[in-house]
Image 1 (tube, helix red, strand yellow):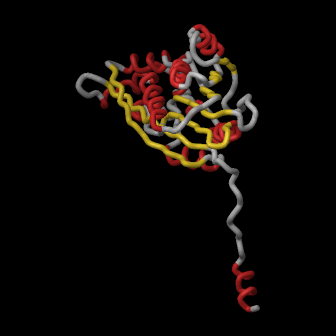
Image 2 (tube, helix red, strand yellow):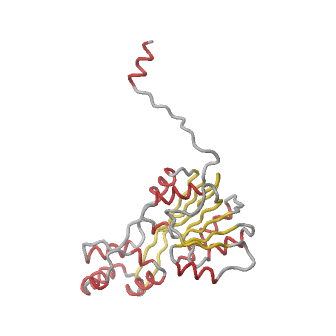
Length: 261
């Protein structure tokens, strides 16, 4: 699923006017997206960034020999290690949902982008894993699945950060599993077990887990259990020119006094 979403996000570069010199891949993982970007923009300098040392090491091993120069950074997207106005394209596929402060991420991206620079991203929306969330709610009062911002909240955050020409859309992807165990294993394999909260297995009774799985069975259809992912795609640009304050606030009393003169 991660690869499919990344490919669909990258395909949007086909209709976006762009010739970047410097690109950052936020949460680059093993670097698959960065390598695709390098093949598309062969003269650009790509900065791959991730919080995981293991992912950085994996990306280095797969470094392309004949494409754009790549650099690898162990850093947090809420504190980008770049100077102001130095990046042409900020790319992020399924990374924003890990941030505890999306507004801070958007502000940092706005800061490092050059004028007319592009931010292109995908993330997860609030209907993600809705079946699992509902099933846990029937088994236990504690929250077990993270909540995610919807498309409108994300768009508002981008505008607050000073970005413009915001374009957003949503895709619903339904994965099918033979049982709950396979779903939970898949979430762990792709690193998405962070979507789950309150999940300390040592503290969770077998009865709670069984109640959740029994509740999930109500969704079974044609022999499979569905798992919904709401994928939000978006892009926005940094304005060519800094915004200026054009609105003036005038009190009603001031207006009345001016009319009496």
